Image 1 (cartoon, rainbow, N blue to C red):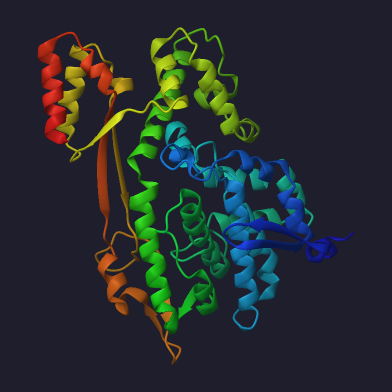
Image 2: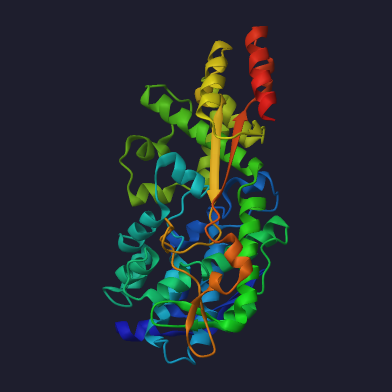
Length: 433
């Protein structure tokens, strides 16, 4: 089989995945089918899409595997629709499909939470997996020797084909359209619902980006408001963030103990490359959520009281209490000092968490955003930035909303023996409540 034959080879019979969001996900390309079967892609079954959000929404157990297939399916539908327009080059079809399928290949356990703890970048590891000595790389090389690099460049947004990049990564892309609907379905809420079929019908290819037919403006309004609601009602849920806090603290403690020479009952073998900075792609791919949960369950029985307690709390959902606060450094410093006086280590039992979102913005005078705008195509062919045409979108453009929470174990505060210190802590926390 020559390279060109493989790139265009179709399965004898179409494969379908039954899907609760898209009904069916269709695969006819041999390349796509072979990529799905690689061990690197199958690993995504063991990575939750929403990290610790299952602690707040019990059915949010879906995986990056589900989501990646969903993004592929949306791009497949985009390609079908785009073929009637001269601006679309069908030679880019396989590139778009492969990049869509593999865009989240480098996610680690518990997704973005994991990146914060170990200062890793899932996009960087996606690139390393695609270009490294992997089964995915071997499949892509059968298309052409340069094809792995092209796919990686689309995902890290350095490819010269800006249209294909925007299909997968922009302010209205296949990635967001899948995760909003999928996460809404699996959390049991309706915030992420919008008329995707309508949006796909009004999408148009252009030289550098996907644009929206003017008549589809209201569908995009609905989509952007769905995204806004999902972030503040679901993705930033304080219970889920509390799970991330415990995971962060437990792994931070394990790293400290490892560096301090502590002898573990269950040595953190799979974490050592993360702890000592010798991480390879092989090491990275070995760590999934099954492995992380195994260690946490084992560490409950460690002699170190802090690691044991934090691991127990995460495994058994014994979360810290949380309070809103204004982000004041003075408040944090004061509470930390009182914790120390009371014998509670603020390094592991007091955590300030801040988060923010920018629902829609674009690069313009006075803006610090480098985002590309969503463009509407008018009947005469002119392109208009969408917030200039929509009062709803104009109202959220550049709206940088922020929030902060303090997390702490209430029962440890109540167990402080010094009544004066305990009273001061309780009074400070009550002022914040």
